[in-house]
Image (cartoon, rainbow, N blue to C red; front, side, top):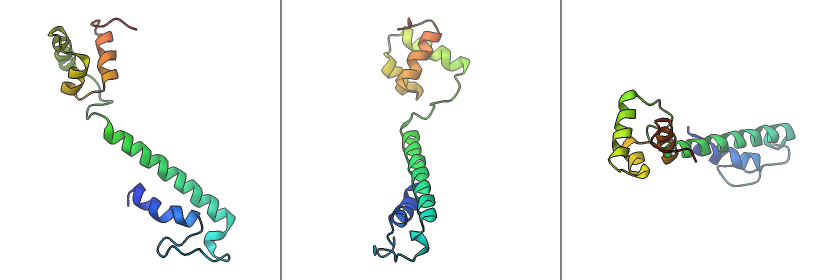
Length: 113
């Protein structure tokens, strides 16, 4: 079960609602116990954080965070020397624009800001 699906079940429980029927839970229900409610809220917060992290991860280019090889450095420098823009290089190398700029600075192709 992924975080989004788990949230559909756990969020209502933390709010005192039966996730299957939408009805309020009885006051004597185990899920109305303050300690249980706090634990459910902590679980909701953790799942929301994980869900946000996963969505962010899915938006990153496929090579984000991977080490640069000497060959990729050479290709990047050559592409830059051929007047490709950092945005074009980011697309070609499947890296973020920030990663391309940082690497070009490291390679001495761009001056630091």
